[in-house]
Length: 206
Image (tube, rainbow, N blue to C red; front, side, top):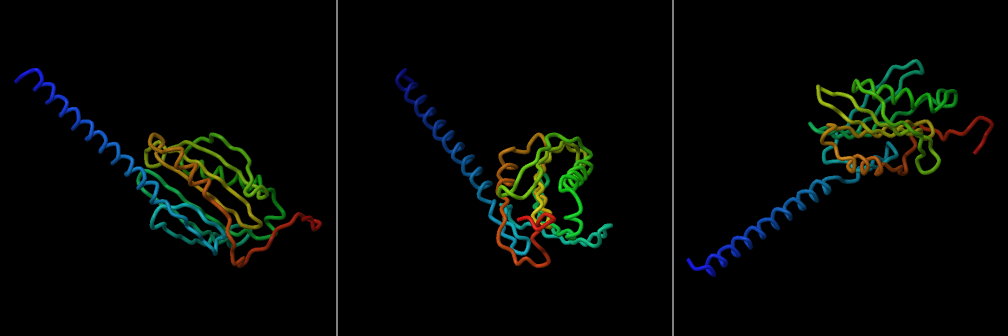
C-alpha cells in the first residue's frame, strides 16, 4: 500500500474514532439528563409542602407515643441502594411548641439522626425558611450497613409542624449537587390546615 493509501486509511480510522467518541459523549450526556429528568415535583397538600422526588416515593405513617401525647409522623421517601431522600413531618401539641425552645427541639432531632448512622456531627447552623420560619441545617458522616455514609439535612418548625428534609447516601458516590438540589427544592404550599394552628409568641405578638 502506498504512503497516501496508509494516510487515507488512518484518516478514516481517526474519523470513525472521532464519531464514536462523539456518540459516547452524547450517550453519557443523555444518561445524565435522564437521571436529572426522573426528579419530579411531589406536592403534598395535606402536608403543606412540595419537593423534588424520584419516581414512586414511599409513604409511611406512624403514631408515636411521647411524653407530650400521641404524635402522628408522616414520611415520604425514596430509598435506593446508593441513596436515600425523604421528607417527614409531624404536628406537635401547641402547649409543647409554646413551652419549649425550637433550638432544643432541633438539637434533639439532629442528634437522633447522627446516632442512627453511628456517626459524628459535621456542620450545624441555623437557617430560615421563607425568611421567617426557624430551622437548622446539619451534616454528619457515619456508617449504615457497613458502608461509609454522608447525611445532610434541614429541619424547620412551621407553626406547630416540624419538617425534616433528609438526603443521605454512600460517602464516596453521593453527589453534593444532587443533595443541594433536593434540599433547595423544598417549598411550602397551601394546606387544608387540618389540626394545625398558627403559632404566635406569648402576649399576642405578630
